[in-house]
Length: 66
Image 1 (spheres, one colour):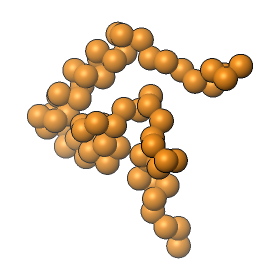
Image 2 (tube, rainbow, N blue to C red):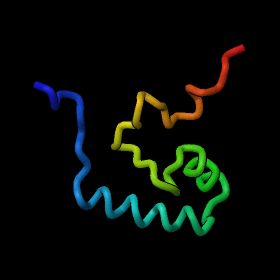
Image 3 (tube, rainbow, N blue to C red):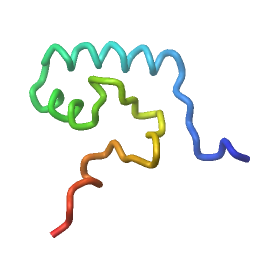
């Protein structure tokens, strides 16, 4: 029951993500590069891993409303 709601990506997904990460680091599409950098995906952050100490990797949650 503790694995409910947790999806583990396969090797193919991780491989494709790594290839796209390299493409984004080299600056293929400006809008995509900006999005990947905001998410931290061009560095060590991965979308399938939980953050430490409850930190959110989603920049939208960090912005104040108002």
